[in-house]
Image 1 (cartoon, rainbow, N blue to C red):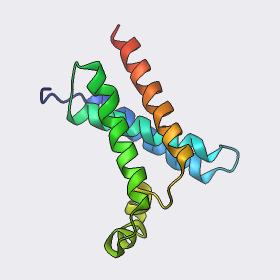
Image 2 (cartoon, rainbow, N blue to C red):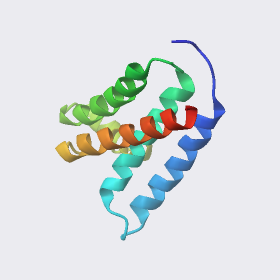
Image 3 (cartoon, one colour):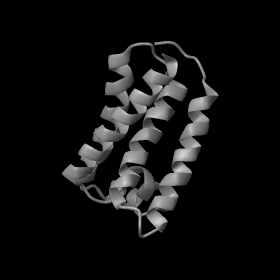
Image 4 (cartoon, one colour):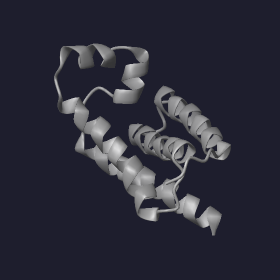
Length: 121
C-alpha cells in the first residue's frame, strides 16, 4: 500500500453521494439502489485515501468497512444511537440492520471494482 492521491476517485465519490441523495428523495428509485451507491462511494473513498495495486485488498477493505458499519447497527449504545440521530450519523451509520444491505454492499463493491479494473486495463 502506498499513500497516493487520485482525485478522480474523490470526484466520483461526490457524484455518487449526489446520486445517492437523489435516490432517497425520489419515490421511483428503489431504496436498495442507495445502498449500492453507498458501497461504490466507500470504494472510491478508500481508493482516494489508500491506493493499492493489490486487487484482493481493493475489494475486501471497502467491503469490510461497509459490513462493519452495517453490523454496528446491531449495537445498542446510547452515544452511538445519539450519533445515528444526527443527519450525518444517519447517512453514514444508517438506522437498522438488514441482511439485504449486506448483499447490496457486495454488489456495489463488485460494480466499482469491476469498472475500476476495466478502466485501468
